[in-house]
Length: 427
Image 1 (cartoon, rainbow, N blue to C red):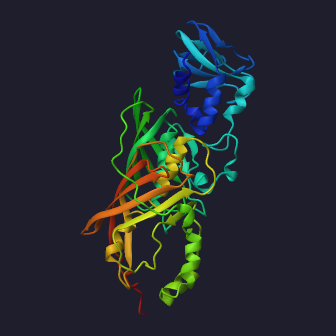
Image 2 (image 1 turned 90 degrees about the horizontal axis):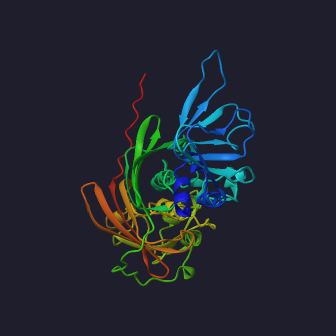
């Protein structure tokens, strides 16, 4: 049997959604093909399991023990599974082939491959993963249903960070697509503000599965309401045309630039900045982000200083990530919303201005493979803002100057509304 077809099949088995792609590759190398004729027993009652079975083609019937001449029965079809690693070592029912049946069997000695604490890494516990990887970790609850949480040390802005929605929803969608297909584009809409104190349920809808492409829609749900929607398209790697018209701007090397922590310390003592601003920076609770950022044009501007509607900065995930390309694209999706729509406010900043910026929609196109734990240059421009909406575009380049991602976003930009005075009784 073709190895690629085995890998693609395993990627569609619901049980394996919780596993990292490295585990799926190992499973694909050790599974054994077994064929049965119609009416053959696959496993007999009280027989000891010899491994975990995945139905590749055909159908099988599970027949429970006799109870007053009524046998409980149900049908197993393609992608269903049974055997060691799922229950006890002894089977309590007969499994009979209802047609020509082909199973892939993971031998008993390799069933430990089904055990993992992370959907991204098979040899590392979740606690030892980088922060951004832990933020993107999901719990599979049911077929196509995942649960994500907002970690205490994750970026928050009084609500669930938009990049967390994008990254976690993309992670959920990616786990329902065979891992030979990688996301190449996504479109998302932010509908309601997310609550950081309760879990987020991600329900994946399998819109289409083709030979080379797959499409998924993901609904993020809290308190019974859909608060975020993502539509993503996945493609199997194929050879094709290759050109690039966009060029990476000339910017300083990231190793020569200040980190956010260093920039903060410098701003606290910079005499060119207003004392009130320096005091505000010094007293504000500083929580390091899981993404390292280095601005290409450090300046004395503040959040109340007018500046051009553009920004260039290098970024990368803190810590080493596994080689799973799906993970790297989820991390980039997460990081893409950290400083994006706010660039549209730059020309309108002034002393005393209190503004509000809320993402409305967010779209990304992944052009080439990338590593999110290596430096990527984020080039952001806001071509226009009108009424209460600002529009921004972005390009991401790797250090070789290759364009790896293109992005757009529209956001709600407006002056913050003063709080309504509370009505209290005068009695």
